[in-house]
Structures are given as C-alpha cells and as structure tokens.
Image 1: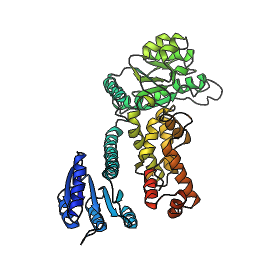
Image 2 (image 1 turned 30 degrees about the vertical axis):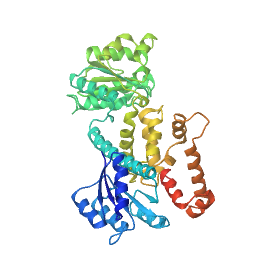
Image 3 (image 1 turned 180 degrees about the horizontal axis):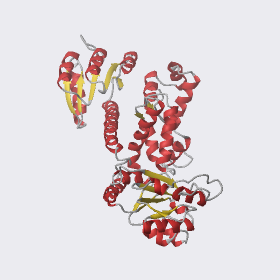
Image 4 (image 1 turned 180 degrees about the vertical axis):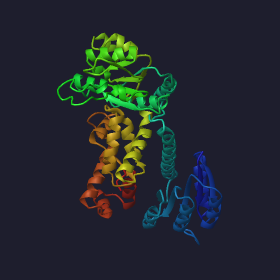
Length: 445
C-alpha cells in the first residue's frame, strides 16, 4: 500500500481528496498547511505528496522546496487554480512530478496519482536492478532469470572438478564469459586462462598457435615458438567455435586429451601439458557429429558436461539488468553521466528479439550512450530496427498507433516552431497546459 500526504488549507477540499484517495486503496494522511506538513515530513517520508499551491503563510512552492531538501527524490503533485498554470510550471521546474487544475474530477486526479506511483515503482525497480547488478559483477554472467540461474548453478558444480566441458549457444550469448567463470571458480584460477577462436584461423596457422613449432619447421619459422597448450600449462584453454576445427586437427586434440602431451610442429619429442580444456560451439555438436563434420570420439571426450546458454530472446527478464550493466560500463568509458532509461525506451529494449543476443545489446547501449544528450536514454537514441520491431509486436503490421501519431505530430510542430510552446499549442489547437503534459508523457523535453 502506498502512503500519500495531502496538504490543503480548505477543509472540505482536504476531506474530498482524502476520501477519493482512500477509496482507491491508498493510505492517506492530511495536513492543513505547510508548517504542519513539514512537521509530519520530518518524522517520516511518503511515497507521494499532493499539495495545493495557494496557501496562507507558507505557499506550495516554498513547501515543495523544503520537502525536496528533506527528501530529494520525493514525488510531489501540485494543485493549482484555473488561470495560474505558470505557477504550476514553475513548481515542475523546482522538481514537482506533475500538476492538476481546479476544478478537477476524481478520475482525473487518480490518473495523475497512478502515473506518479508507477514512476515511483520504476525508481524502486532501478534501485533493485542496481543492487542485483552489483551482486552479479563478480560472477561475470549478468542475469537473474531462471535459465541463467540454472547455467550459473551448473558452472558452480563443475568448476572445481577439473573436467572438460562443452558450452553451446548462438553467437553473442556469452560463451566466453561462461568459460571464464568456470576458470575463476576452479582450482586453476591462479594460473592462466587463454582463449583461441578456431574459426578465425586457417587450419595450419591454428595448429601452430595451439601446439607451437620449432625453428625452421616451415617457411617463416625463424625461431622456436611456444603454443597455447604450453603457455596455458596449469591453467585453462578455451577453444571457441571448435566446430570449425578441421578433421586432422581434431585427431591431434583428441590425442592431447588422452595422453596429456603435445608435439610442436617440426619436433620429434613430446611435451607434457596440464591444461583444462573448455570448448564452445555456436552449432549443436551432436548434429555436427551426425553430419560427419565432427569426430564422435572427440565429441564424447569433450562432452563430460554440456552447458547450453539461452539466446536473449528467451530471457527477456534479464534485459533491464544487462542494459544497466552496459550503460554503466559505456558511461564510465565515454565519460558520460547517463542515469537510466525512459520507460518507453526500456519497453522497446524488452520487446525486441535481439538476433545478435547479448553482444548486440551491448553495442546498442554503447551507441545510445554516445548519442544521448539527456540524463536518460530515450527512444530517439535507439536504432530504427529496434523501434520498428518493438512496435510490430504490439500493433498490427502497417498500422500506426494513435499515440505514436500524436507524438510525431507534436515533435514535428516543436521542430517547426523551434521549441516555442505557445506557438505549438496555438497551431495544434490545444492549451499550453495540455501541451506541457503531452511533452512529458512522450518524453519530448
């Protein structure tokens, strides 16, 4: 239940406000003037304050400033008489959330109150996400959805056991992070973690990188080179995209797993190595085995445990947490203090399918941080494909929602009249107060 403090010097209006809000299920306390309200606020905070602007002794603007000194994040709705909208706008510049004009109907009041409390929920959700994010940072893998919790639990179980493992998942799902998490939780954590992408090199070059070579082993081998297996001795070697390794290299990898020894190219002597191997594939290796592209014996040697990372479209609950993680990281790197996302921007991120998975989300957030000029990432800083796909998920294809049309119309008028709101309101045939509310609603400020 939300707690609301109502400040109104008119007794009948004060009683009406309390009755309307109490009937809606809110816990309501009232004060007859600013001083009385401050005495109450010094004892406890409220989720929301509703105050009249015109009051004797201490007016609503003064009360607003004093309340903000006590609780900077407090939500305040001001009530103003018809014809004094300028005072309400001044109050909003001082930090009021919104305003309503007298006379007002109960439903109009409740609508503004609900929006304010929804905003309060968003603030609390941001705090929760920040708290969760801090607990996730040390674990490398960001997320708290059921699918990700299962992945983390499996990693914690296998990490100390020194077994081989296969990590499967689409490109961009974070297979490298999962491999690092296994290493950090293992007995080998103090030793090296080395990673190599088997799909990025030719087979000859990949073999040289993995096993090393002797001087003169081939043209260009001007000195002896230590390979990744030797360099990772005592630690962990992550073989990414192992499904791209050729058949001859697969045979040599199998021999290393069976014997614990490698032979440099051009050498006749084997070298013992103690390395934990973690392999990753962006294709299901079982199907690659069935198709004859991957050796069955190597597959079963690697497949002591298989960890499957879900695509981002199957873990939408993690998107806010990931988005805030990348926002903090990009903001720090780029030197920009952006504190969050507008509700509409976050909705767009959540409803998008993310074919590029977590990696795509990271790049989108970095781009948004670069483009955004305000304190929160808005829709205008997101790529068009995200906005179009998120709209398709909630509206029939080819049909624009009424609120989207209104938003575009106001945005166009603001550009045309260079932000002069009185001219925009006149051109659109609406009052300035209505225009102000719509600008806030559509995040056009």
